[in-house]
Image (cartoon, rainbow, N blue to C red; front, side):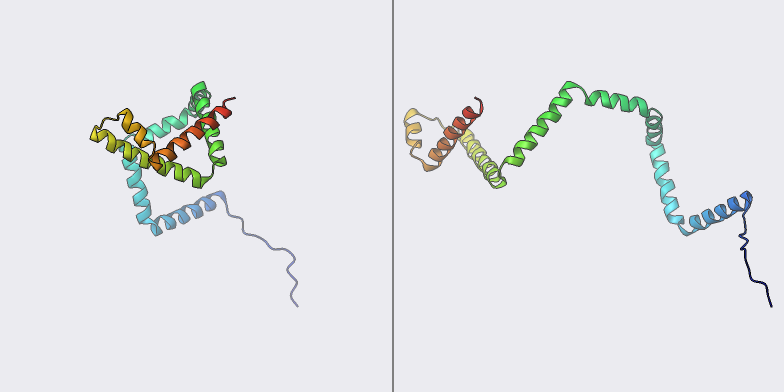
Length: 158
């Protein structure tokens, strides 16, 4: 009767055999993806021709200096003011009703179109015509909106 196997001897590769195996795997990978490898080398050659590789290399070498400069620029007062203003505007926009905002923007566009037509016609507005225009429902609606907008703005400025 045979003796039972109590230990398994795992074949250990030498460092040289390990390198040879990696090299064979790399050769196989290159041969299977020849077109892709050629495209990568073409792209690299183009980037090298225009100097992008050298620029990227220099940028990576100077990463600490670049980070210091970028951080310095970001912490300047005008930049922090822009960031704070954008955050404030974003906060206001989140509180506004999207339907109202859309209607207001559409109304502004319509108003700009009408204003451009009036500028092109070069028509004079007399006091009599101004009083007559107050009876126009569109103008009356806009004036009512403007007056109440100014009232709300004044309340907010207290």
